[in-house]
Image (cartoon, rainbow, N blue to C red; front, side):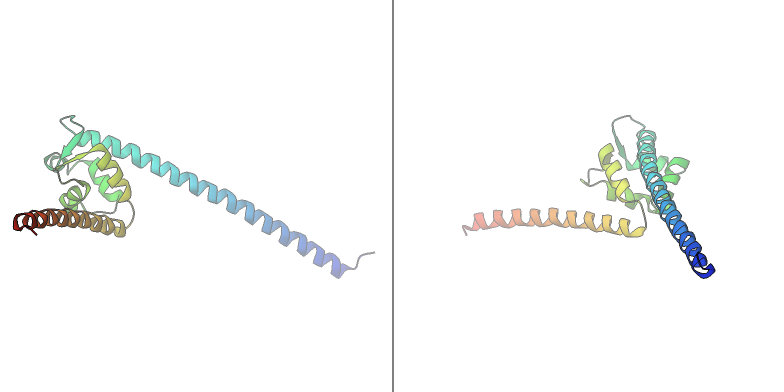
Length: 158
């Protein structure tokens, strides 16, 4: 014989345990779905960037210059790209210079893809990329100055 109070406690225990288990299973499914969505978004972004680069590269040289980008500023694909990386279209030239790591005036497909993928997200990523670019420029300047000082030291016989 089971007392009604213990029976009620047992029913509440089973109900609570069942709900907790369903909550865990639901959490696993949701987390898996979110992860899959992030992966799909990454694949979409890469494909979109490749397509955008092909659109911008009018000369089919495998490189884009600022003039080619400037001609496409009204293109919906380019505008969507700026929206995806949370950058205003008015900052396009600064972004171009940022992606042009070797300061050649041209961006090849690898520079475009790797740079654009790193720029996704809030403005913090853009700020970090800008700092990386400035650091690279400063390293180049320091190397040039060191080379000039070595040349002067050789001339002076030091």
